[in-house]
Length: 120
Image 1 (cartoon, rainbow, N blue to C red):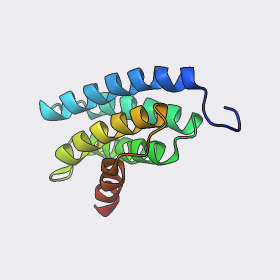
Image 2 (tube, one colour):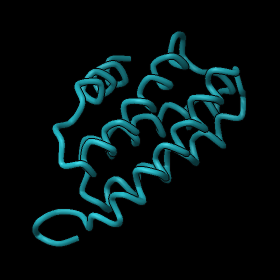
Image 3 (cartoon, rainbow, N blue to C red):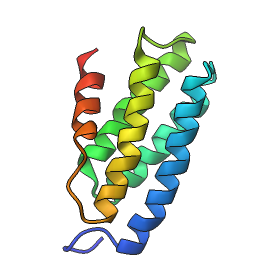
Image 4 (cartoon, helix red, strand yellow):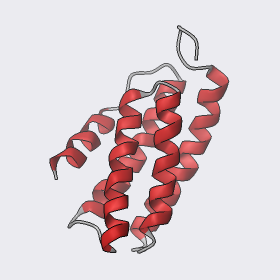
């Protein structure tokens, strides 16, 4: 990463990766999967890449998702209403990465999702 920001090619690759991983997370949650460990691994990969690329709030969001999914994996269930919030957070994360790659302002849903995941 240079002083100007993340490498544009790496960011563009992360746009595709984040969309795929977030779709896996959302689809799993929307279909009622109980394989929370697989979803946690997707969030973990998103967290690591976002932090490496300097996408602080997106990385923070991925980290919160990862924590919730780790807790769900240990207890074999999500907190009430958490599946919907995590699915929405996955969409916000993918849109946040896309905006960063385009040099646009962070979508408001990133902040909303951060607030929701911090709240419970």
